[in-house]
Length: 501
Image (cartoon, rainbow, N blue to C red):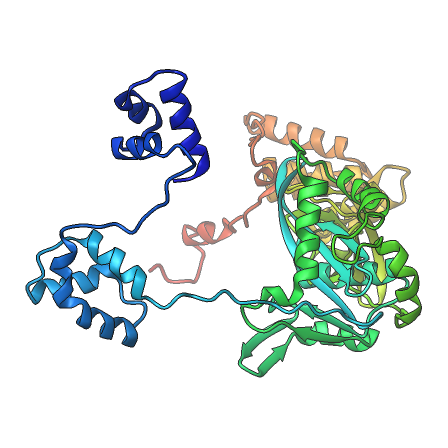
């Protein structure tokens, strides 16, 4: 019985004059506990080992229980109860558990040795999940990259929307630039960005990450499996970020959190008196910085690189969004190089365009200049198709086009109108009109229309109405090959030498 419970029971009994039953009900304790507290005036009564008449029932089985626990310390009380019941034990589980507590070997808690590193020797690195953030029309996972220098406890943090390898390397580059140098070794747990496979001492490092480490000249070191305590400095740093910087925020705004984190890092985290060193990280860093390796001048390109194919609309897909490219690159295979803030699109070694990166989803990021000239190209293509289709009508069409060219007329317009007449009246009627127009040197779609109307009126035919399909306007331009009706005339010609079938 603890002192708080004892004092409460005494106060309710002596001052409030409650009965033992009322005290038992109010506090949710047994009446026996209330009696013991009231009977002990000098302090909480000691918890004595439970005595029970049933303990004698267990006496005959204690030898068996001891031998079993010595051989298998983790055996449960339930399993041992079943064993001794088969031998005739008639008691309950409570007596058995009380006895097992006295004979089980006491578990020892591991004691860890605090290791201090020399200046410039080690940095510890890790990711921390920090919830999610709403960006426009979507929600993305928010992560925090933390690097802590082992000697000074100088801390660098950066919030990201991805834990990809490229983001991991990019955060390293930013951290080294912030410190103005880098340590000889960096300590990690077994995350996939660093270690692809591990079996005992056999380790397969991530090849691209090792390329980055080689370019910067530091050695990646892995913690032992399930030994997070070996990177306790960065673990404590992550807890400090969550407890001091993130705690109490009703919501997080992107990208505001980045600027706020920088201010907190410089004004709070690295200026505080550290609980272990009893010094400011910034003060100790003044010495450690002189021991850091120099950051390579060339740097390292940590961009996300993807091969993509532009669509028919001159768009490429990347990270849930679409980005425009110049229209001549439609249907082509291109290369995306994306950083935290930009999306660059290349064709081979030629940079085509640069867009601001969007972290929403389903957004189309366009540059209007990419579509300049596309309407003119489409018009030229249409004119070329109309010209080819007109010439395909036969020699008469070629002669008529030569005459049109000698006029000041808008030839593409007139060709388009004549081809519309082909769709409406058929090839034969248009050719007949062209032949009549050539006799009189009448050039232009209006002459062709008038001739067709006159010829149809002479035969008693009405002008057909054009068919327009609103949902599929391109279908109205479909034409079919006209059959040669002369074949049927030959079949009924008595002078024909061909035998009837």
